[in-house]
Image (cartoon, rainbow, N blue to C red; front, side, top):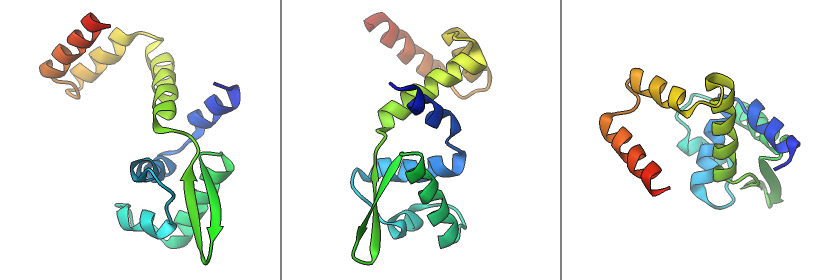
Length: 126
């Protein structure tokens, strides 16, 4: 992975991430109308278009003109983003301690005992 990619990952704001989640789920080129229909926000069309422009500038999406519509295509696969963002989270907030991360999730009641059992099985199989 390039340093440029890692820089992009660190800078993607929550609003843009919401758009990317819709784009990743679609698994094909999409329009701004497609995104507006699936957003759970009260954004205006100009707000969405500005965020889409930013994602294109950061090379998370590519924009192609097709007739009167712009089609947006994912350039950064979800798996790549998740790996980089998770690594950054682990490094910055937990000093590369997986135990610290899991403990904070458990203490914050974000992870159940069943989740921990599943993690234990994963570790044993890895």
